[in-house]
Length: 449
Image (tube, rainbow, N blue to C red; front, side, top):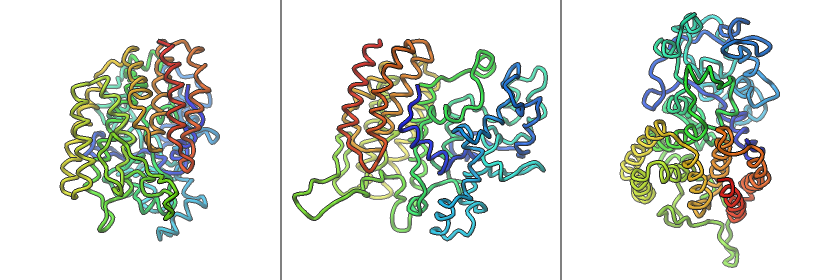
């Protein structure tokens, strides 16, 4: 059920931008501590994950082959470091005054594995290797495949519990949004030098980077969170991460502009009074004309999820969201206080989502909230892009759970593709076209109930 149009846009962030998952920062929700990183070769034996065919009894055992696939998005992490050798990356480096981006911590901490301690088989050229996602194997590699070993045993020894949505989101966000670690934050300065804009949707990223099968055996050993839960938890923690980083980042006398919606400033304008303004007011946020707009793409989708799953918390989220937008127009201290309050609500919602069931009725209600109830919120390109991805994710979850017939859902593919097309090019963004396309999807989704 995954789409083609906007998927390519998000894939460009994976392939060209921070296409990595790197060592987490304990200040956020990622695992605490990390052991020595032994390198991809330590996982590559034919009795482990290095087979040429999927023939393993419990896991496929060809995971490294999938991770290295040069023709697929599944291979994006393996290619992450080599991308720094390409002309575009080198040009970005020259603009930033970096002689060699492939050796710069400002780049390789997300395009590689910034292992705190390295074994003899560790290689920078491996890009974002196994341990960048699963934690250093020095403490658990020898025991994790032993007879009788359990997933809980492995986690206790230091393997990161990526089956937990909050852990996975925390690790992914370190590079796919940013962390407090040097070299793990794409600032406005880096974007001005040519780095692509980053976007985050945990379920989509999981699908693009899946190297294993979540079959019955996997579910029995680790549990399967499901697409809706991954999506919801990822949205909540993306909001929390941005708000938590805001007070720590500045650009001289100015705030760090990467937190704001790019096109609230980067838009065409004219002195001719007959030329219509491109700026669009959004009734969901109390933002004055001329005020840079906080990039609330994840926040708007989070509000829709909260309205359905946690109505009482949703009211607090909306109030704190409006207070935060208003505080951004006052002073930095007030904005920091409002950001902290809103971040706390987002963290609470992440916890609530991780324990939620997300059954068929709730998933349909979430689709309705995104496509109908919150339709007027999609005035800005980045929010509109999140709305399309959300619709696709939620519909795919209904299909994968057996709640909706696959053939009936597939009939919506052309309508979803039209919505993706409306959000494909930020320079030709027409929100009315997107809302019209989403309205058609909404009508057909209701017929699936």
